[in-house]
Length: 158
Length: 400
Image 1 (cartoon, rainbow over the protein chains, first blue to last red):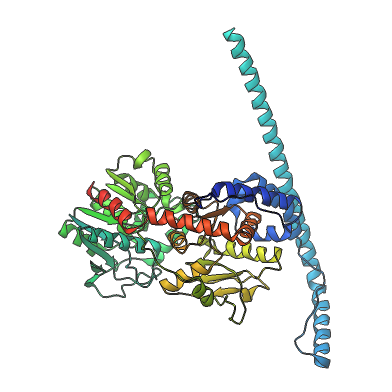
Image 2 (spheres, rainbow over the protein chains, first blue to last red):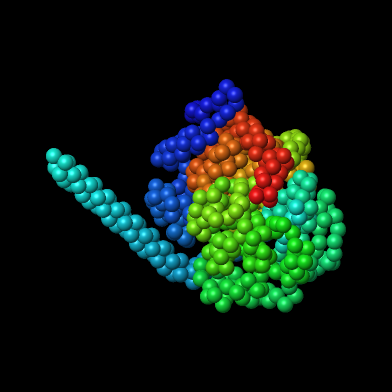
């Protein structure tokens, strides 16, 4: 386990802001190293929309993880039955049969839903990418104009 | 000096909102400081119906004379609610609709008549979105000290509310962040603009003793309990989206899934539904309403107190957790709670789930740090929120 580089003063005081900085650094590192399951995190962020709005770094991470949770799981799952013995086996078989029959009706529906989710996700990613590119271009242009202005000012003074 | 405190309800058994508890807290402090205090409230019990369920009349509570008055019987609750929904959806009401919102808000003409007849020197009223406050500001602007309990929410942008903020004598704020929010929303300028009196007063808390062992027993997390010993995080209060409890539940569930070896439970007190995350249902402990002593013991036994509300004007539960010597974990986008935690050095703040998990890891792995944060918060609370310091700030405000 990594050691935490946080200090407690001789008088017992703690610089909470410095500790939070260390938490942020550590959390970003763990995310980068894949120590946290992105799907679990993305699912947990459904109520934290203010962070999506205010924190571009968080938004990018959220966006890259969201595709894993937009797909409806249409695969089989293990059916467990509290009854044991023959009754249990019969009930499991019955439930499997019902599931197969239902799949006939639901498969098309969920496939369409998955396709729609994928389209929405791609559109959102494209929009975000385009916005980042536009922002980068605007920043570069501002920097260039500032450089030219500074040069003109210098020439004027001379 | 005669002071009338106006409150929508009277705090009883912790079953009312924080603003009403705060108003009565301030009234008792003013009475003990020698002011001639009357606490005027309504006959309502339910904050949904505002029906006049309690008898009118006068009695003494904690050394303060209390008088109950009926809520305006002609109030149209349904119309009011429909306007509230429109405002909370971001709609701007017309001037006529704003007046309808005010007329059908919680008002008491009998209470206002009593204020007029007794002619107090100051009228202390809150919170800001109640008809009592708006009417007081219209009828007695030169006397009204508003205890806004202001949040950055759509209701704060209603025209008649802005007008009230610009007309009252003064403000009794809970935190500097609340004062700054009022200044930015209503263009009040530094120090609350043209108001004659403005101060950050806060809420007075008495120090208490608490038992971590008893807290763990109450939570069912002590070693002899059926589930065995387990650490726990705590939330006390109303469980609802506005208080951030669904987000906390999701984050705690993510923590448990990320740390499968952990037995960290989540203990709740207070009211409201809890949506239990699948597979972790048994590790949520809902104790409902508990006594103050039980709450303090639960705080003392917790790993940390967690709060993810973004709409607060003061986190009284944070102060209590610090008095119980435990740190807090708050959502960074909750400006007031984060500023409070930062100033107190009493805890940590997180922006997202990965930071929450990392912060909780740290609190668990470094109990010395958790204890130091708790002690720092305690020292800060005792210095700024003792009866003496709050009473002194309040007396100066009322006398200005």
